[in-house]
Amino acid sequence: MEKIVVSVAPVRAGDPVDAGKLAEDVARSAKAGASMVHLHCRKPDGSLTPDISYMVECFEKIDEKCDIVFQASTGGVSEMNIEERCRPLAYRKVGTASLNAGSTNLGEAVYHNSAAEIRYCSEEIYKAGVIPDIEVFDIGMFYNIERLRGEIPFRTPLFYNLVFGQQGGMQANIEDLIAFRSRVPADAKWGVTHYGRQDWTFLAAAIAMGASTVRIGFEDSHYLTETEDAEYNWQLVERLVELIRAMGREPATTEEARKILGTTVR
Image (cartoon, rainbow, N blue to C red):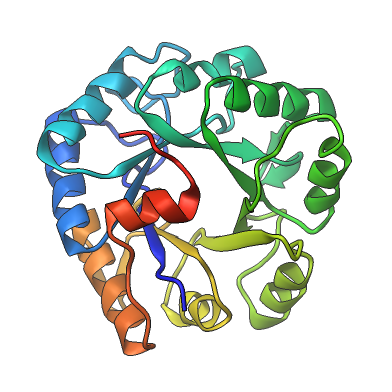
């Protein structure tokens, strides 16, 4: 069975970002088995921004310490328009980027991704030579992408990131996982993000069902054990890799991840 791409999303929304400390944590996460890092475009105070300069600084410091696939977010609840959200695509070392496949409620906020915005982001991702990581929060979003496949030269296989746990979206239970997984197109690959994770059982179920990617990190949860939060992201990566190996699978190396994802960006 194909190895699993472990993606670390190391920054919780709103937390300050220290580029040097972040690079140390990501480098140790890579050593523990992560082969991709997911970052939003933020200021040092943690707020989202259309200015990519600090995001680039963070990626560059990471690049000095380890070899890992860079994934840039084109999302997040903010006042930015879609053109501003896509600016991270200009950074030449981005190998993959999130493509949000529809609008949803995230708690009290509305995460707006209209058909026109999805189309624009798709076009910009392909212009930049980046691999889309299609984030879906409910089943209907698969059909948004299917409608676009006649217009956008999507590469195959497509990669779907099935997001669970957000208030307003699919929840992290076996019934929703089975339903969500059943709608992944036959020619696509899929992975999971478990927002608000409080144990490891749901990720174990996704691994057992054949997930190609699994995301872990402070952006989604600090949970390490029933009584302990992780102090660093690498601790979460270590625990996830232990789980993957206990289930008879292996984490992908960064070079293997590039082949799985179809990116040649270094």
